[in-house]
Image 1 (cartoon, rainbow, N blue to C red):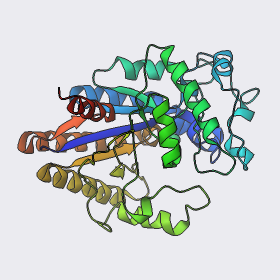
Image 2 (cartoon, helix red, strand yellow; image 1 turned 180 degrees about the vertical axis):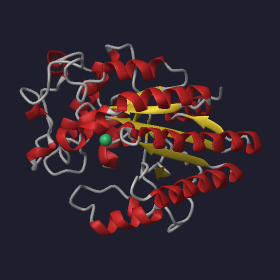
Image 3 (tube, rainbow, N blue to C red; image 1 turned 135 degrees about the vertical axis):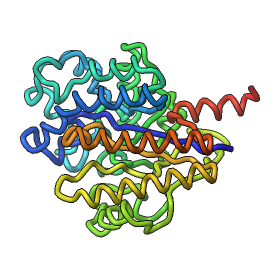
Image 4 (cartoon, protein in one colour; image 1 turned 180 degrees about the horizontal axis):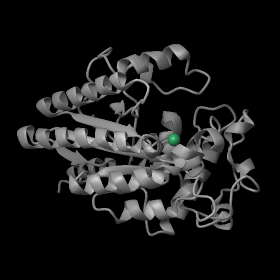
Length: 328
Ligand SMILES: [Zn+2]
């Protein structure tokens, strides 16, 4: 079996960061997605890269009324009320994409959907946190139902999910399956990457992941896909692509080398290598980040020529598994 390079992006605008950052501190990076996304799409198209864009449902909304019409009646009652975006809907966001490009992104979704090989997937409707106290499975399922409805209004059906903050449990995965999802992005298999709530995500755990981004602390992250008898297919992340750090270009160079080394190993051994990031990570230093992507894609082209490495979205892998199961 030849290796595959899987790419997924969490398209969330401010909805993915609103509890940690403000429009003042991070709005420029989110606005920068408007340049970064077309830049990525153009490179993906030129290199035949098939990528999954896990998109927050609220990003699809035409305007505030559309957003409120799609919002589920059953909403997560997090113990930490700041985690819920619903309080902000009435007065903290603008009326539509024209006046508030930090919260609405229907135009971006349309650009993704119009680019060959790109899969529009879900990152839940409200950037739902499955491990935060106060949430329930019923609220999660209502959230996914809303995500499905707003996407289907654009003629898109969702088959893949990326769980916000990579928080998930088997019960949430089963609920996603009931909502028509047949694959999800799991976490890398080692300790530092397991599914955690915000409170459990200690400085030590984060430092371990940071170090592992540049030196092989726990080996290369390529893997063989594991068959499951039923339920959604796990397509674990191999690595988060860290954005370019202007103050530490040597760190960025080492990180890129680590990622390319892991891609090479996956291609040689016929493994999966699943790289992910957020478009807002490219929203600052966009030129340097796109240059980094150019180097990665040139490396992929070399691996494709020499080892037959393929590009696949999460949905492609799920589709392949379903057709294999059906014997076609
Ligand atoms: Zn997110």
